[in-house]
Length: 94
View 1: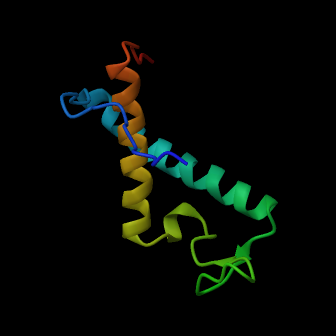
View 2: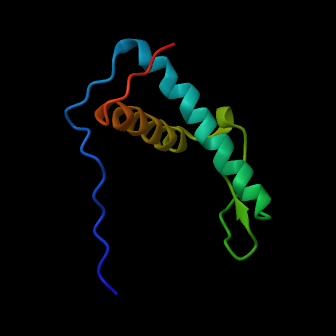
């Protein structure tokens, strides 16, 4: 099998417009909601410690209850998604 080498779109030259900054938090919340819904559909439930065999995960809580480190992960995903959309030539308008 050929070695997989990730090659994401280079968004290092993209600066998000100020009006999109509030969207990052809304998207991060939704990223978490989608992730949690998918996990729960797979039979995962909340547990204070992650246990793959028992399908317990400590992040199966509402977004506001997540630790900041997890929120930052979701924010980074959202920010990179917005940057990618812009880099690919699309406009985001309200």
